[in-house]
Image 1: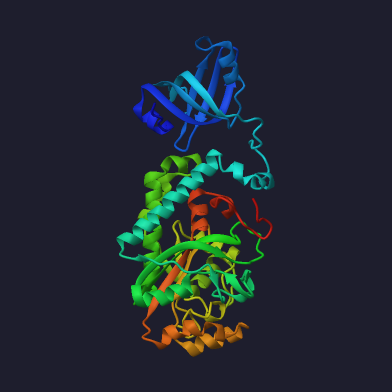
Image 2: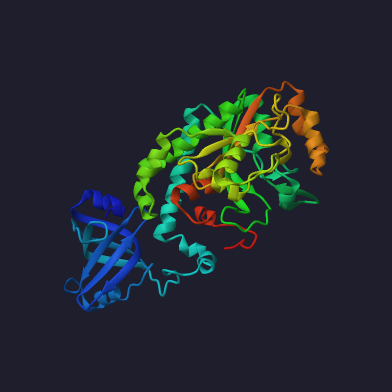
Length: 430
């Protein structure tokens, strides 16, 4: 006996099939039992006719509830009235795991759904999101292999900050203390002197007490670093990466996008368009002229300003040359405009920052001064400054917030749905 997936059975179209999965929906009468079976590939309607089974066997089918697992053997045929266009007339079935009163139902509140995330993962919506996430991440890996990059993995436990001491998660490390990674970047910069072009993806931790729909305490950062590259090269490469991954999702996950009520064709058109790049100063001018918003130079763009700016475009937009005073210590000054940093953010059409990157500073003294101004101790980063002392070269890199990109392309209300088990200031389980 060979079991096939539901999708494989539908591709076959007719004849005998054996499938296994879980009850997605069920209804019945004293003569017929309709079971919509689901597996990871799709759903299909299965019909159990009472006159084909003993009273005892039909009673087993009649008692089946949502999320019971079973094996089904029968004959598949096309039926336009069925949910996915095919129906299986059941010849035999075996219940593998019974289920009674599955707690996840429609229209339950957010808190309840998150408390039971281990079960809500089974919903068609979450299944579609996780498939899209998997396809996106696999596409990214494929993209970097094609571009000749090496994968490089950095430690999760790190002795110092890279994005600001106030957002560090402290960890007891034997009789000392260390911190959960804020970024792969500082270690990646050491590796480019050996491998030149590298990439990675790993868990990232920020102890920000933000409770917004775009923040997580633990998320997955997809990062890259390249020797010899400048700001223009790295920001254009970021556009190429995001385009490539979205294109793969559209090609391979159109049905899942439709399950989420997203239009694959709309995303395809976004990929095919030019994605603009503007300077921070130009962004301030645009906000002033078109939105009547006065933003003082030196301020980082807030959520409301990013959203207003994004509304003037129908694609992602890259903003470069943010003010040095608002940027991390490793983002270098523009030699022609010392108050501006050689850095960039990419905003999605929904106004959410999805990529952040920069050239990397080669000026040890400037980096030390900026760390001191931020209340940090530069001595903990002497190993990092060594990279500038021994054969340094210009280099650049960026990080992509995977959950934020998925929130945009899946049309989600919250970044919390773009990750299987969200971690926030208020949630650390299940």
